[in-house]
Image 1 (spheres, rainbow over the protein chains, first blue to last red):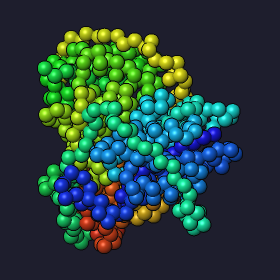
Image 2 (cartoon, each protein chain N blue to C red):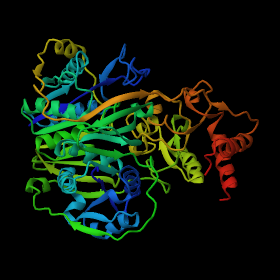
Image 3 (cartoon, one colour):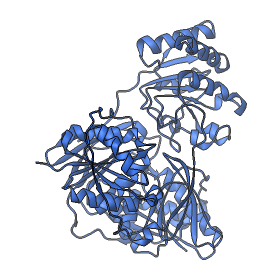
Image 4 (cartoon, one colour):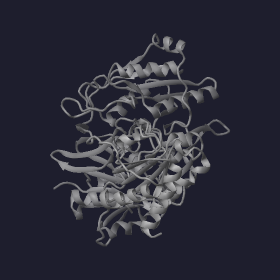
Length: 260
Length: 327
């Protein structure tokens, strides 16, 4: 089986957020980029399927600017993916999840693909749009918020669970399809040093951007705002637990006005 | 004259979901009361159309077919895009987290729409729309321009008030399923299990959330958290330490690899406040922290703090809440 995993570099969770000089987006000066959390789960899931089914190949693809895109592709190779493809974005295109999906679709099309995996969303823009848009571009069904993934007895259909508004749904679907994984339910492996060293020398295929964008419109960020910093908790002074409880309920009622 | 807004509804019991009612409210504010069209799909879509009528939406397109109860987003997007074109809509609005996100993602390609998800603010600007949406787990907010002839927007549940009641006659237009290619019906939903949770509201719906962390120490102590939540009518959450230890299932987890919540009141009990937890709850309006460690980072983001032993504080607080609410 041929599996493609789509990954995205996102700012590390510990990043101190700051607006860029023009105020439209995140200031990425000195920001450390890492593989998005759910994407890490998708890579792990792909590698588990590979281990369970001999002959499986895992291709990793990403769309975005250098150098961070190359870094997450190499990180995925170090984890055990077999090939990496970098979809370059057309110059001057603002970060937009549909535009990213269009670029990813070209990368996916450049390698053999039966199952396409990605994370439910990335922790930066939290759009969660890539799986559906990719499904539409590839002409196959997509499933979001997938919790776990396995073969049915005949190894021809996938069985999985999804976490939706309705609860936990059980599904069965034939290939090809796009699956967006949710939850770090599997403890993703970490790369071993020899693999990290080896991954630095592995080739990365490049897919050129569309010469002229065939679409008009799309979305672009115009403002990035941070909430006013929280000033720290007002600590409640008390001698007994009952006094603490009374003072807190009073504050929630009269001051914060959030008591039900 | 601008085109109408098409609101794609979720069928819920015998009417439409709360998230759909909120989307109708947004649509009426943007396009005018008479310029909103509804869409519903599923085995009871025609009956549910009355839910749109109650809110003054008199034109509803209905795809009534039991197969649509379990169809994938690919099928729904194809139907919605066709209806949107037939009514010359400029905007498709949909409520609901997973449902809305999956649909607008497809419309970004199929209907060539500018797309935004998780939207908490939406207004018309020259040459399109402007949305506001939380990013980075609610640690920041971005404003985004949607440009082009079409936009598809998923609005965040509870971010907008529901449309007010103003009953109108409903004219139903049936939607044909003939154009759907056979392979799109191949995936099968085998079943659905309603999420395991307490008697309170679900995490996503709750206006108050009480979460427990490592400080609770053992599964058998977690009832303290649940009792406090019950006294407040709150949803129950947990930090990753709790779900990793198996004290509660993974769907309780609030944080980077769990759910993001932004209730009116968030009570963190025995949670130190690692960044991975904070990103899931920091946009809550009022945060209360109860922790024995005065240096815990949770006190930096909390509005009110009690430094003390949760095994003493929490039962006292549950009692006091019950007393104050007369329950």
